Amino acid sequence: GILNAISEDPIFTWMVILSAVLIALAFLLAAATVHFRFANIRKEQAWRNLETKWRPLANRVISGEIPASALHQAVEPAERYFFVEFLARYATRFERHEKAILESLAEPYLPGIAARLDSEDPDIRSRAIITLGLLGPRKHVMALVEGLSAEEPITVLAAARALCALEDENAVRHVFLHIHKAELWSVSFLSRVIASAGRAAERPCREIMVDPDRSVWIRILAVESLRKLNDFEAADLARDLILSQSDAPPGVLCACLRLLKNIGTERHLDAIRHVWGSDNDAVRTNAIAALGGAGTRDDLPRLRLMVSDANQWVVWSAIRGIMNLGDRDFLRDLVKAGHKAGPAAQAVLDEVSAGHEGLLQAERL
Image (cartoon, rainbow, N blue to C red):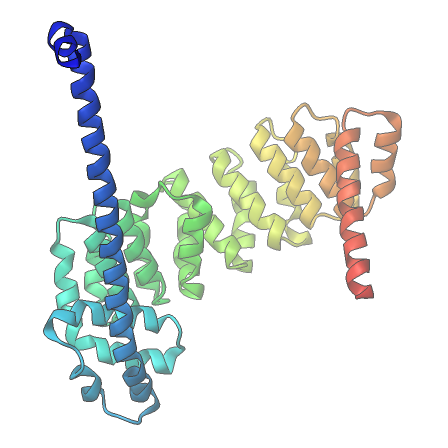
């Protein structure tokens, strides 16, 4: 029978053994899934119970009804880290006065959080940085600066965000010394982090922007941060840089042109016009886009010429610039003439028409 077949056929034997092993593994995985699911449910319930216990007391402390000691008495020694996590989450909901009260509530527990920066687990270190940034940034600023020295990008980024939130110029300078470790994140995202420092970021960014000894990547990050800050002094620096360093790295020139597109004025147009015919496709594209954003009708002949450019991004930038400067008739003529830029011109015309119709419908409502 089956036993004889198993004993006589080794392949069949191994198939039976393998099937049994796979079935056993399936049962183990199912059991593990159920176990972790119930464990997570228990954790969630425990967390809800703690929040239910602490939130009413925290609200009464904030309103001045009861002293802080009444809330501290409700925190068991084993619950200290959970309590700090509760305060960190709670702090994001309040403005400066209420947040200061929460910071004072957290202060007795923060040395224990700072000690976690010595952990070998990068997730624990980054979480400690985030917590210190939310609940004790000024009293633990050196711990945040030390966090920038970490090798893993997630901890460096957490420290950078916490330090930039201080809106302190020296803190921003520290961030720029280490932010290259977080290069895995996009420049767009990191520039928002830097810009969160507000005006405290302006001077360090301007200095880096024009410093040829700094890396191209860090200079681009500085310019993009200034663009998000709408720093008008940076527009003058961008103009001077383009005119005096036309051989600067293309990435830096492109960042400067994007800045001028956003906040440039007529006094910056000479710089944009200086590079509008650049041999570098990226520089040319950004220069044409800047002319379309900051230019005047005097720049229409340049933009019209560029609709025949070999680079499709230059063509699109030229067409959008022509639309921005109000020459729709030229775009319609491109479509009628069957020009190679006709489809792009039609797309931009349709886009603007759809937006206009949307505005009309909104006005009717």
